[in-house]
Structures are given as structure tokens and as C-alpha cells.
Length: 66
Image 1 (cartoon, rainbow, N blue to C red):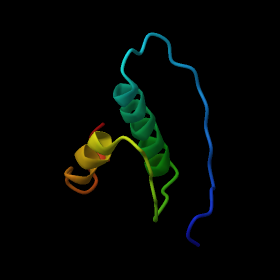
Image 2 (cartoon, rainbow, N blue to C red):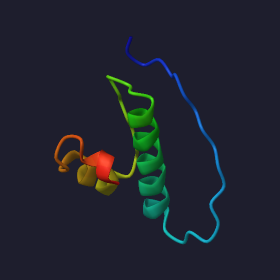
Image 3 (cartoon, rainbow, N blue to C red):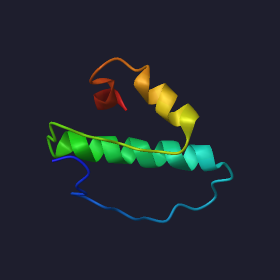
């Protein structure tokens, strides 16, 4: 199934002055959750192109090291 939301999350983080840092932290938390839940297929979206680029250049499974 494509485009089905299986998980949603919300939390409050204080003292972040950069929206790109917030996007990166969110993506990191999401990827760690996906790994812990052993999701086989994942579509992660973000409007922060630098964050998406950084994730796409990482070697496979490097999210385990985050």
C-alpha cells in the first residue's frame, strides 16, 4: 500500500532556532522508530531539501548508527 499513514507522532522541543535542525531531529526520530518497528518499506517526506539530501547520501542501514 502506498500513501497509507501507519504512524503519527508529536512532541515539543524547546530552544531550537533553526527549522532545518528541527526537520533533521524529526527525521532521525522517525527513522529510528521505523527501524525499531522493523518496517520493511518506508516513504519519508520532508520539505527540508538539505535534510533529504543528507539522508539520501548515507549508506544503507547507517540510520542504525544515529
